Amino acid sequence: MGESSSKRKGILGELYDTFFSKSWPMWVGGILLGVGNIVLFIVLKPWGASGGVKNWGDNLFNLMGGDFANMGAVGQFPYSVLCIMLVLGALAGALFSKQFALRFPPLGELFKGLIGGLLMGLGAVVGVSCTIGGFFSGWPALSLGAVVFTAGLVVGTWLAVKYLLFEVQKFPKLSSGKTSSILDAGKGRGSWQPFAGAAVVLIGLIVAFRYTGTSSVLAWYASIGLYFGLVCQRSRFCVVRALREPFMSGSSKPAVAVMAGILVSMFGFVVIKFMGVRGDMIWVWPHFWVPAIVGGTIFGFGMTIAGGCTVGSLWRAGEGHIKLWASVFGMMVAMPFTAKYIKTPFFDALPASLKQQFFLPAKIGYGAAVGVFVLLILLWYVWVKWNERTGKFSAY
Amino acid sequence: MQGDLVLDCKGLSCPMPILKLAMAMKKLENGKVIEMYGTDPGSRDDVPAWCERTGHTLVEMLEVEDGFTFFIRCEK
Image (cartoon, rainbow over all chains, first blue to last red; front, side, top):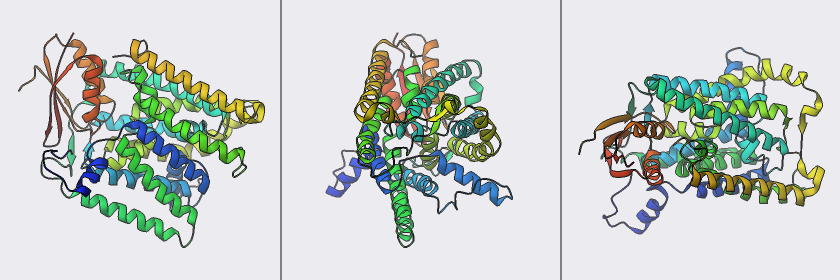
């Protein structure tokens, strides 16, 4: 954790402290992720998180003799590589700042992580999105389905906040009990962590480099994943907090961080799509509007119970929170099964008009579509700021 | 120093520490002090920020063996 500032540092030591002594403001993370998302789109496609974890689950259950989707081996599917490297990047960030420890929560919390993960997996497949694909990247892609998915996220989050308040008052035992942490950097014990962090980064870079021989896309996805994980951990970037805090503490900072990232990405995405560098319909999912609202609500409830969306769970897993390991495991289990047994009958039952890919510029042109999204973000900003001052929707 | 009420949030991750703190604070009398333990790195920023927003006083924050100890005085 923090070094004493009275000790005079060398020039490089000061540089190190700039990055790893204190957490970065979350909006810095939002902007850095927003830029990274544009780079990712230039390499192949925008950022998405749940697809990678689904691939882990598919591979796991296929290995056990199941017959699930085959999007490629864990090391060959770009989004799976991205997710693995994101965990490594977060691990490195935590180690560099001596914040890594395996933190075992009370049993009730572990259970909530698992349930939250299972619900997220269900919601992500039914809604064809998560907080990244259907929100952080979906809005910049100018998909109207992403707005509906986000509305679902808000409803689910609000419901889960009600539940959490109820739980803490009526069943405080669920979140208390025996806990432990190991490998932590308690007083004088953590000097090994920055060295381990350097080793993790080195391993990550070697992995990325090894892909250059076969696939430059995978090499870039690996590098960007590492960068995303580091940024997420250092800025504690969290979409759950952005949507949840207005209903809890009232803080607007996480929401503003997400807005910053979305706006930055939108700038790049619109140019990429408008200029025809990549297809219009990329990251415009066929979920407008029924799958989006159903999946978004379930996902929003799950992520709030778990205390992290897909990405939030991944980077906190890298930081060593065992509760979020349970959440990631829950997603790995729920997604393959939902895709195989629930998604098809659900989508078959819906008429085409209720599961559209709705690319807003196709109806009203690019200028107006961008205007609509910027206006939505402005309204959201005014609401979170007004709520922060008045506490109208906040629990405490 | 010693708190009037001990709140053990070790092993908990966001949002549980602040949620428990807020609920405990609601029941506390003015001037009493909560002694809170936590291990989530996020608490290092979250607890001071929450105190500032709600007007409770963060009397002291200690980095201890496996995390943090906060002393927070209830201001009503």
